[in-house]
Image (tube, rainbow, N blue to C red; front, side, top):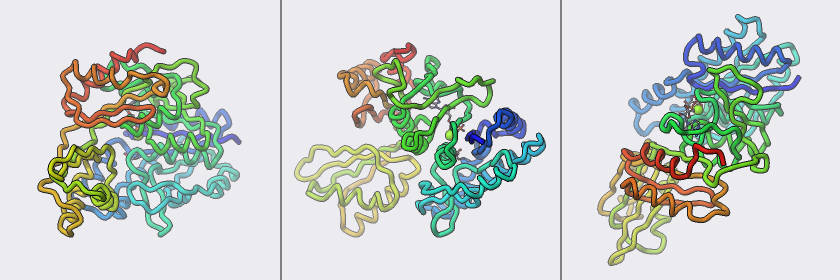
Length: 412
Ligand code: ADP
Ligand code: ASP
Ligand code: MG
């Protein structure tokens, strides 16, 4: 039997009624003759609640216990989805990550999937089971402990299963009907894309577009998984939603494909560090050892041998970063007069593979922001994206102004 992977995100399994609605959709695919692997997220809001419990209990938590707690939301929805399917007379069974097993690295809270042996589930399919419901987001480390794949990780579970089972397609059911030129929740001119290239989706995801977890796009690209994003709330035809595909399979495209944003950024500045060879290594090595994901970096011009070093990192890593820097100062590795954390910033990015061959995108972006009176604090660029860090209060304005200026509401 051909295998289909169907993933339902948090809002799609938020209530028993929605689980029923999702189960009906699974039933339709079973009736077409597929063996279906359903990947479920926790009910919406559940994982945030669990993360809150952990932070309140232990601000610099042990990541192994964080995983033990935050993985639990998916156990509930996996069991409920299997029960709902059974009530519809569809033979179904639930699996937690460790039972499959979804083997991951031991990088707790952001583990990577290394292997998914297909035998257990394949055997069950051969015995007549029609649907394997798997708790997304979870895995098991080589040490035998529960791991999680980072926020939004159920998308990655879904794509990894599609690759491991050679699925015909991986359908990601969510609360929007596809991938848009920007988040439709903050820009009403956002346009749904019928197709988007892997590279562009990868950048949009890594720059904050929550609709797919970055790692899921990487895996889909590597293993050539046919990946589709669609709504679990609307009736669907076979070509509904957005297909994430190779660049060659897209006929028309704009220079800029989309605008992404992330509220989850903090800017940290070490004031007056000695400007000497090795200073960057002395700062960024302890940050990396403390598990801080540094994104943008700027070193100011130095005056009298001293300089300010600014970097950005996710807001929930600010405490870790501060501690790592204070410890490095205490043990004499670095010296600074002050460490300043600004958590009222946001990152806004424009993305498009057309930038490889078109110049002037950066200039235009800066002009648009300048016209709106938005001050740029940090800039980074790559071949197909430009990102700026700005005051968070201007984030929506910046996204909308850029969407207008690059005419993203019109198909290219
Ligand atoms: P799920 O719980 O189904 O995994 P997520 O909340 O993780 O859903 O992702 C879907 C959300 O992603 C949408 O509700 C939307 O607000 C947001 N989003 C951000 N950027 C985009 C984009 N470019 N296209 C579509 N959705 C986007
Ligand atoms: N429940 C997890 C989260 O909220 C995983 C997911 O939904 O993809 O991050
Ligand atoms: Mg998600």
